[in-house]
Amino acid sequence: MTLPRIGVTLGDPGGVGPEVAVKCLSRPEALPPAEYVVFGDARVLANEEKKAGLKLGAEEWHGGRPGRAGVFLKEVRVPATPAGAGRLSAENGKASFLFFEAAVAEARSGRLDGLTTAPVSKAAWGLAGLPWRGHTEYLSRDYPRAVMAFWSERLKVALYTHHRPLREAAEAVREAPLGEFLISLHQALAKVPGGPYSLLVAGLNPHAGEDGRLGREDEEEIRPAVERAVRAGVPASGPFSPDTVFLRARGRDKTVAVALYHDQGLIPFKLEAFHSGVNVTLGLPFVRTSPAHGTAYEIAGKGAADPGSMAEALRLAAAFSAGAS
Image (tube, rainbow, N blue to C red):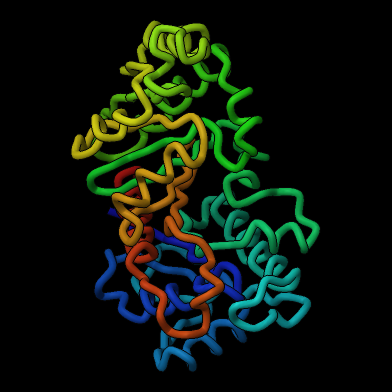
């Protein structure tokens, strides 16, 4: 089997991304065998190594095949010196985007099997004048069927909408696009090791509308969308009451709960797997994972960041890449 080649972006230099990346990659023997390629400015990497008292010994990456196990560096020099740890800034936002953009280009060309992206700040991207709200929105530009999902041993969640205001998310719950989303999600999951997966779809209103007494969307939009997907061969069911659907999915390895908006899915997921959960973008021609936490500016630069979720993201990227080969 070909050794997986995983790109690793450093994320926002003002957040905990560089710290958790260095902590994980300094012990490659604790990760699945792979060629881990860091995309970042060498100054940012060296500064983080010095603060952590760790050394990656990363060689310059040239991208030749076959891959070699170990840690390598693809330098992405940024035009402005990134601001310090714990700071929200346009410079940090631009730097994190350039790291990510370079890694995506290599994955799109087939020179990477997967990406693991350290956290970025949506606010910093905005300050930098970038039009995307995050990684998934950028990827959706070229891959419109991309799906934001969250993966852990005991709970798996896919989001119908994600970084949208709640009012917009509720207005987006319509039969035709939701039905197409469920079909696309099923097709994406067919490429993920461990399946086949069934889908449990959350309702929008309390008690999934309680037969229309607490809102009509569940009966008029969500149920027909699920039925449309089932007719297309998708093993889906619902809508289920939002306060129980995640309990139904929890502990079932081959089940994915479908949340209709960001916090509906992320609150139960982070309660279950904050330090071990992984953000996965499905529906791409390559694997993309990320830790389930954000930049955590408040602890950046203090050496206190838990690398658990980053380590799981790297492991999942390697496992999914190997499973897809």
